[in-house]
Amino acid sequence: MREWNGKTYWIVGASEGLGEALAHQLSRAGASVILSARSEERLSAISAALPGQSRILPLDVTDEDAVIRAVDDAGGIDGMVYLAGTYWPMKATDWNVAHGLQMIDTNLGGAMRVLGHLVPRMLERGKGHIVLTGSLSGYRGLPGTVGYGASKAGLMHLAEAIDMDLRDTPLEVQLVNPGFVRSRLTEQNDFRMPFIMEPEDAAREIFEHMGGEGFSRNFPLAFSWLFRVSRIFPRWLHSAIFNR
Image (tube, rainbow, N blue to C red; front, side, top):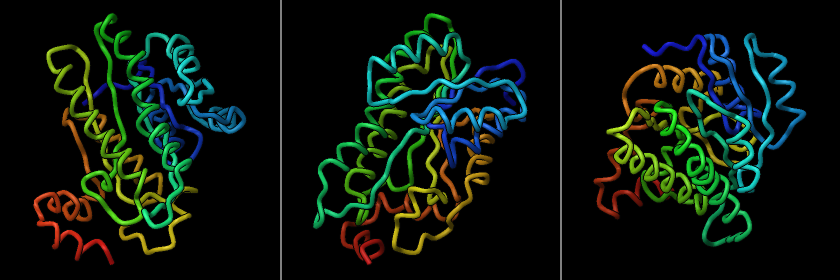
């Protein structure tokens, strides 16, 4: 079990939903929490509601200069959880280039910026815990996920790559792949979302995973098996199941 008391964790993407719920989980466990997102007002309200020590660090992950300053300001943290993300449903028959690029830049590019400046600091200190948030939608192409699915697939690949590169160092890398989580973003969907989870339940899954030593966790478990097994489906079967 991981010891949380006296540890400092930086949550990038903490202004609502899953990030806010995870901040409460970590704070109740005794960790000091740094909260980052674009909305300073929202971060301040969350920080004030946490039971333990916390501070805010407003950040736009698409701004590299801002990321560099934030990494400096975060200082000698014990861990970082990347939850920053944006989402619009988008089909290839109704393309929105601006939305697509913003999803790629926030969900994947933002993680690349943060990691690119944070990992060297962690290596210098000789310790660090990195948690990245993929998605079940990243396992294989799905209808209506242009931009979002690609960004999450890239983030999952990034997590696996850095885990392999950092395996012989003191740094730890973990990946979580949620299914549907109720949020302002998923409210945009006009279809039924099976096994949709409340943010608090999803945050509990992430927190439990962070406390262990395994690399990845996919949840909800039963729902996740369909996506994981679909990687070996022939194209026609995958399309028949998901393209409805």
